[in-house]
Image 1 (tube, rainbow, N blue to C red):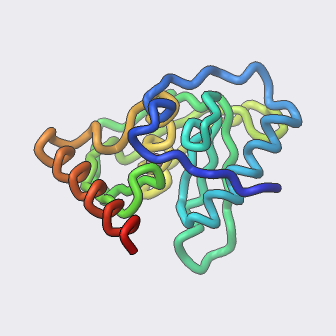
Image 2 (cartoon, helix red, strand yellow):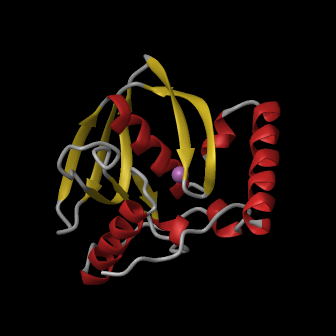
Length: 173
Ligand code: NI
């Protein structure tokens, strides 16, 4: 396995639509492992392939990564939201491509997702809570959508300005 660099905004690859994978072969399975290693090291709870410069519909998630519970990695190719609840909830979201920036985002509380696992088997997962939010956030990445697209322009501009400031501080440190 290998850790790979994570792209940050305004890298144009983060704004492109990712293409479906034909099948989960050894190359895609390997990509999933590299992405998991990268995500755990960041640390983060989700990572989508465009964030590592690969425009394929692949993502990894582990909502247990932030706490002390044992790892529960999910590896998905071609994830598709089959159903989303009308009931919505909000979470303070962040993103490894917009380091140290957070905003409340409102999304459906529950989703049903169909995907291919690391062995190319079709699976369906019902998710709620943090997992439902993270899955929607990562699937957005496959469409070139970032969490800041779900907040007001005022809030978005504030986050982008703050990110610039954080980078200047980081560079001068
Ligand atoms: Ni993200």
